Image 1 (cartoon, helix red, strand yellow):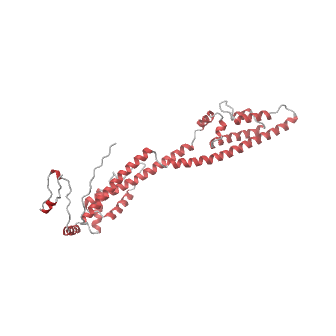
Image 2 (cartoon, rainbow, N blue to C red):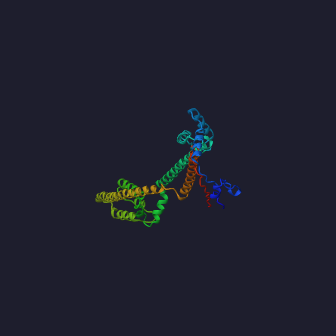
Image 3 (spheres, rainbow, N blue to C red):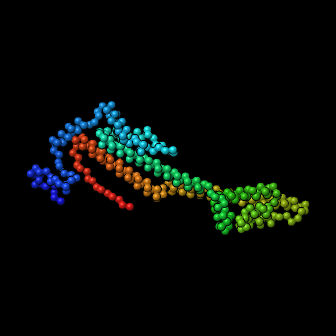
Length: 323
């Protein structure tokens, strides 16, 4: 392309060549000190309303036609954004930049709108994290006991599998207390007490020990001396139940500490949203940040020009993104 600012053209006082091929191409023209001073004098004549009343009226015009439309504030049955907070945010940006004219007011509107929507992104992220953490904790706090019993049964030795979790030990402790209550009332272990620990006809470590104890302590006759023997057998059976109950309760506390630590770790891991949600949030946030920074740059450039500064043409770049 022909150089639009060749030395020969400048030497002859000629302007750059005009034509279709030069439309939209900025001309590099150095501003003289005299012209710069004139620009500054002219800028002083077009600074917009100067009195507090005039500025208030101008600001209210912007509020009527700017960001405070029904499209900006979210208002529904379960969510209602604060108009007062949005007005306060706009007021702070208005005081910061003091826009003059509809274009600068529009750019301040764009900045505030982008900032308001960025705040909404943070709330959405917080809500997603809260849902993720709370839902996981809620699901884990309501285990399906029937389903868990089936898993214990499929493990081979159900009681051995139960001893590896707080819920399993808590269930065993409840059964042992019931057997102990029956033992205190009836005076001896019964087959029904043993069967309480049997899963679908499959014996386990607890049912085997209790069955062996029941057989060994069963009375062989109804003699007078047998009453004392039954009392001794009851005492021995209660001692066995109490020892097992103490072991199960200790295991329950140990498992509970371990599971609490695991739950804390799960909740910490759930603070990070899923990849799909995180990607959506980051894309939306990046788009809003670009809009805000672009409006900030345009506003700064316009205000510098209004103050009479020589501002070079911005470098424009078109970026397209294809999925």
